[in-house]
Length: 155
Image 1 (spheres, one colour):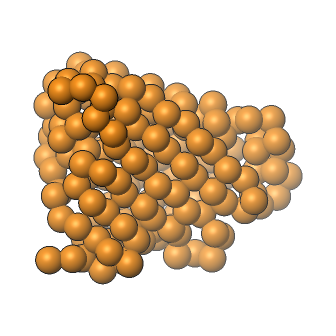
Image 2 (tube, rainbow, N blue to C red):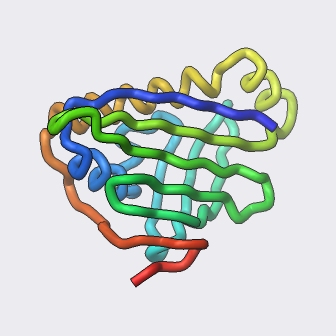
Image 3 (cartoon, rainbow, N blue to C red):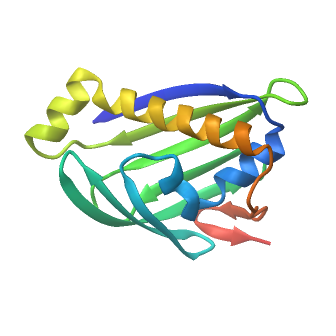
């Protein structure tokens, strides 16, 4: 099993950072490998990406979501990809983002990439792109403040 843990501090209030992160369809603006993200419903997303020259599509299920605290997900394609993003205020205008992702590498390219740290570099770069995006913009482009517990919207 491969794992990536990365963190970054962002000069923006936690609600702004969290709200922007919930705008999944804007992920291609800061995630280099993501070509498209489509919100199917409150707990499902369709992803399209090109990773290591291979094009992939998958459905991810949001398993937990708590406003201004965190979002957890897992893929539904049987590859065992899962992760979570946690948000922590470190001041009125500063937020720490922690990302944890795990997956089972498939094939030589993914296994080699995991061994040499390419995945960490990619996640770090995506977080730096997100930081630039939200700090330059200063406001979120939208928000979804709903909660999800055990893969179900909690109302």
